[in-house]
Picture 1 (cartoon, rainbow, N blue to C red):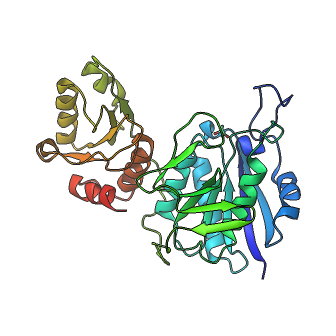
Picture 2: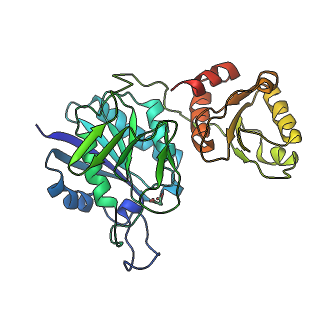
Picture 3: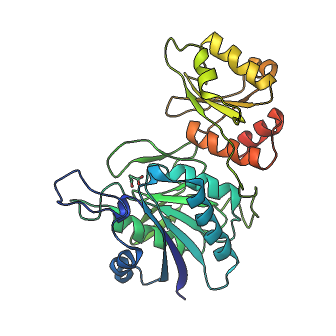
Length: 325
Ligand code: SIN
C-alpha cells in the first residue's frame, strides 16, 4: 500500500537555484513544492505526496512564528487518518534546531523527517533530489515511527537530538553525536541500525507560546566578565555558555554567571568544541550551573527555551532534561 506523505516546504538550498551551475550566487527557496514533487514523484512510487508551501526562506531567517506554523501543521497531520508521515524541506543551517524543537514537542506515532541539500537544484552534483527520494523512502518505511524526528542528509539518517551540521560545505555535512547515523539510506535501500527507541511516545513538552530570551555566550581567550552584562537584559531568562573544552570560561566570567544563577537565571555550560560530552563538575553544585552533556550550544539553547516555556526552571530539573536521551 502506498504511504501518504505530507511535505511541508520552508525553502533552503534544496529549493535553491543559481544563475549558472558554476557560480556561487544561488538563492535558497526558489523552487516551489509543486515543482519539487513533480521531479521526485517518478522516483518515489511507494508514496502519495501532498505538498504545502509554508515559506521560501534561507533557514538563517527562521523565526518562532515559522516554527509555530510548522509545528501546527505537524500536530494536525499527527491526528489525521489520511497522513502516514511528514517531511519538512529545510535549509541546513538551522535544521538541527528545528529538528530538536519538533522532537521535543511532537508525539512519535508517525515519522517526521527533515531534509535539505548542500547544493542548489541546478548545481553540478546537486544532492537535493537524492536526499528527498531518501527522505521519502525513510518516511514511508513502517519502521520509521518511534524514533522521534529524523534528519536525512548524505545517505544517512540521524536522530534530532544527535544531529548537527559539522561542515560548512560538501554533501557530507552532518554528523551525529553521541550516536552517529541510526540508518543508512539510498534510493534503493534502507538499513536501520537498531530498533525504534521512542515507541509511541506522546509529546514530551508543550510547544512554547513564547520563546524565552536565552543568549549564547561564546568564550574566547582573554574574555572580560563585563561581556556577560552586555548580553543579559531584563527579559533574559537563561544563558548558554559556549565554553572552552568541557564548558569552561575565565574565572571572572564564571563568577558573573554564578551571580546570574543566584538571581534565578538558568546557566547551561556547553562547549565551543565541535564534539564531546560536557559533564557536571563539582563547581556546578555550588554555582547552580547545568551541564549541557551531549548538546552543542545551539541545541542546548532550544532545549532550555522549551524547558523554561514549560515552567521548568529549577537547575536540578533542567539538568535531568539535559541528561535524558
Ligand atoms: C539555509 O540554511 O537555508 C542555507 C543553506 C542550506 O540551505 O543548506
